[in-house]
Image (cartoon, rainbow, N blue to C red; front, side, top):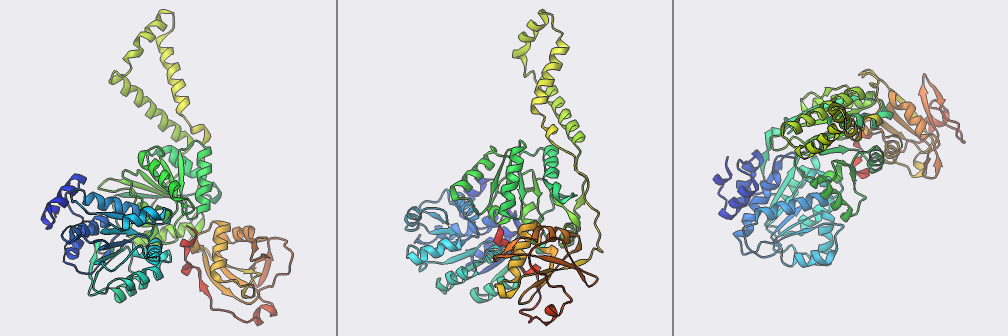
Length: 567
């Protein structure tokens, strides 16, 4: 369907045409008429489907056709980046409409300019925390509010904004339009729709199918401690002009940026610890092409809407299936093709890749890492092609006289050309810094579990979340590698993938947790074996002390742990 068929006012049609939109996407076709009719809406839509325009265009038209009183529209976004991106898009839609003001309010920005904007703005875009700040200061009133949009509601809930959202919705006028967009429909999302929406219309894009059809997906089986070398091989082989690299933690983002930078890659990092001016500078550099590689966490990357991303690399595999979709969906946009690579180390991560295949109903192809010889050959062929291109285009005529001079002085022209090729190629060739990486261990679906005994329990005010977080932080393992956890007064029992047990034992033994020195033992054939001599006596699984300990809580599965706290 064309936008011209959607009952939009001429000023918006002109702005939409200038942006380059002609055909509306499925979510836009479904949502725009419903919102213009003033009805509540639930939009199930993944990244890259055009949902910002799906709610941005109708809210601009609603304001244009109203008395233009301030504070009519409130759009809640999970992150600063997404809020700023949404504000930018809405300003584009209202370009040819006079007296429509858009205010973006989010953390990391000074309050006074935001307060001044709020006095005039009809459309307010912000993060829940900063919106609550303005409500408490009484610099934002909801009395004129006609429409509330919850953008990426699932992500806002994952980030712990549920209470803020509930407070905002309760203080909003009862007779209003409530719009919710989410990639998933969790029980928490459904509760919000039940409590705060009235007969909402459901618009589901592609019946829940994942929008990754234009993306060729690969994974590489690599040793755990050679992931960075493997990533450098892939980057050198493909040489993307613009690429995103995803890590699961802020710490890993910093480490990887440092390693890649030291090896000659132009790279910047993006995560939640950066100040707003730093984040803005990083994004400007990435969008302008000054930086070709951006390493980011999932939450920090929310709202990044950069065109022409050649490739996405998953240095770490995300713990949530939807995060994987959001990551690779940064490439292959607007009908263009894209490519993604996931680095998988160990059996548990290979199983994780196969579970993603089942989730998407698509194949992620295994790909061998390129060798340094293949990379050098590829670079050399590209270099030769550039020389031929120059010769065909007569782009080097100004150097003819210099070559004539060399020839007159007795130099062989062929040798001159060969010398120049050698100088230029060696200057541009970085393959000598790379090293080959062997394939990781083979995947086996029969790998078992190992139970680990940790000498700390509920008496030390420990909980399962803390144990899981510590294991993830110290080992770099994904949460899915951790099984059930049983808590007792003076110790805990953790189930772990057998292939990862030694890594946990190595990293955790001697680690300080809650001012205790940790001692971990593994159970095998009813005998515990210690991997480190740490002061303190460990309790064996079969001991009387263990069996008589009072059970403090039920066994907890690590999959219920909220992993976003570290992004």
